[in-house]
Image (spheres, helix red, strand yellow):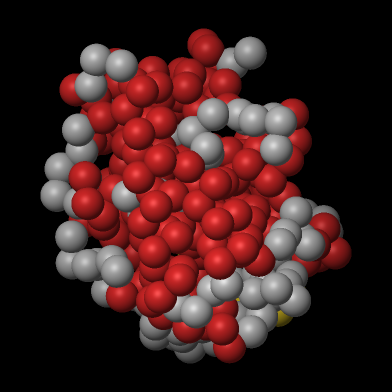
Length: 290
């Protein structure tokens, strides 16, 4: 899949139902949103019937490619408003929401350095890169005024996997899953701190990011760590879960679903209700939901 080098700017919905553009814009403020008869040449066209019928990694991936490879900068969804919201959620990594802490040249440089760390020709690294961007966007949806440090922690929270799981995943083989995840977080905190210092981030901010990344695999009293947890978990469900079950199979996926749900707060659980899940993941969520 080719790397999309440009951002999506327009999102059109072709629907016969009432469309609450204001609520949509609140979730995705960088988009020019409209209910129209059609889009422009080069726009990605998403058929709502195909979206609602998607039941596997392969079917979701085919829809992803339609957006990823579109030469234009718009998306047209033929379907209900709820379908349009689900499509936008899955693809929010293509239309970056920012705030005053991240709408800066310094943050642009960090994004570029983060991108350079990832060999996108490796499928697992590409999945981690997409997940990092998506987690960053989930943080900003949950907390529009997210601090610089919180946004950086979201962006770098899984950076350790570039060393341990770039070519093959190993988490399903470990005897103690929580211990494995805690070690992953600790090492990731150190790697994030090193990269951010090289990018010119001040010591205080880099230390704070290191602390959040190092603790992000457990729910904490720290509100910002909880937000990283929530964003990480929501990104797993909204973006990565179809690929996860295809790679790991049912037994490990059910364990992952239970582990991830236990990390989510009430707000995140409400957001999860609006996320499109493939049937296997939806079944596991129903079985293990608190």
